[in-house]
Image (cartoon, rainbow, N blue to C red):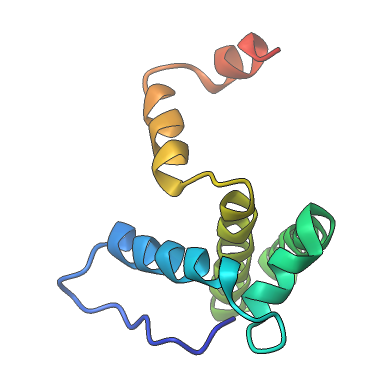
Length: 117
């Protein structure tokens, strides 16, 4: 991931940190792909970004089954980062994801899944 400082202080919420990360990722859409890993991902499109999302999801599951809590958290961070890149590639935001999740409160997960087309 990028080397930008995203240190979370006790005053910052998780949403604040994710919002800052989302802004940095969005700014990389127009950066030189030779100077930014995120820009390289954008240049590769859904195929490149999607393969990283899949890879990181697999690594998260593997870590959860066999590794330390620190590794699980690290792999979860990698998955979130690559997911945000994929959303940004489509000009979608975490706010949209949050709205969708909020709309599911109070709805059984089984009912929600059955209602999908």
